Image (cartoon, rainbow, N blue to C red; front, top):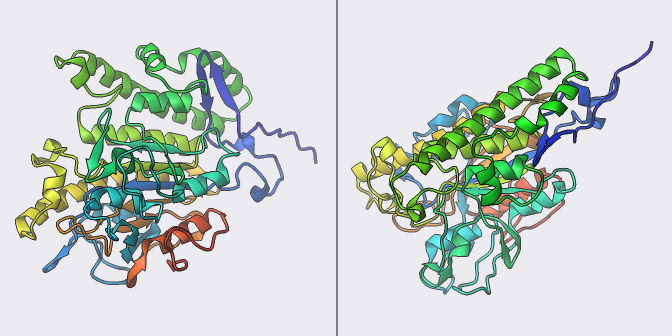
Length: 451
């Protein structure tokens, strides 16, 4: 028997003027008669962390807004988590966790900022409004260090935030603590990016730093235009199935780019002064913005540009309103619901909408083939926050849900831990699942079984 199939590299890219397009996994990247585990088709694990600020509507009287009423398998989805029910077999809700590092511990006010700064670091951040910041290396960056030699970008830090936030954002704390989840060292917070255009350039540009100038130059022309010649050459090496995969992938990429261009054109016509306009490629509607950022994460995972992302729905205490769903009160104000049933229902509506937007990404990942399964099978996504009941700034029983099947994670579970179990215990388990051999993290007291 003569085997003629020759594999192309998993790191194959299409290049053009200022363009470097990574590709999704193709059959042509898998050598013939080679065990899957030893090839490009061996599942790469992806990790995403999604932060909901100001706590969520927790359980009240007879309504379990976030936490399911029963523990174990086959639990009934709560109203806020209901959008994730179609993915039941890959959903694990974890309750009872305590984000203890966000407590005052003698530092006074500042619960909001400490909630964010501690969520993935498991450390009590230093109270300062200066440059002498101190937190801890975040879990996402511990995982990113495991994969950084295998992907063009170690990680992506994304958010829906204003163009710039400076000064003191909470009593005695620098804004840097509250505007990112990621810390590459105890003194180095990684800035988030809110501009879909700049993220697009970061993923599909020529590898240089994304800039407003480069983005402006691309507002009318497609990033695919200068890669047409290489694309034609690649097609001649691919079979019909791979051609279809590449075509579908580029269609999605082109559609995301078109939406960014459409937004830029609309923003350019805005009567607002330039300093009041949204950032580069930033849609006016919250859901349009979120979906673009989720689409970019999906493309980055599919093309293996990065395997680690963080995403913030916003920063704590921000006054953003959500007229898209009929909520004209600020996010922070709604979190102080006073245990009023009507106010709680209103806040639950917002929290449910955020989870529903997250489900948009989950669905896309489930529908994307990847090796011997799909992207969701090989990913672990964590959504939640560093505060539970925002009305009293509680850090006990923080909202956490895991979605995906990376490293054998099993869903259809509500894991009700002993109340007060450190959130860092779960972070130990998540980091361990990536292949990093750690025994402790932050203020952990061990790991956490999610079986």
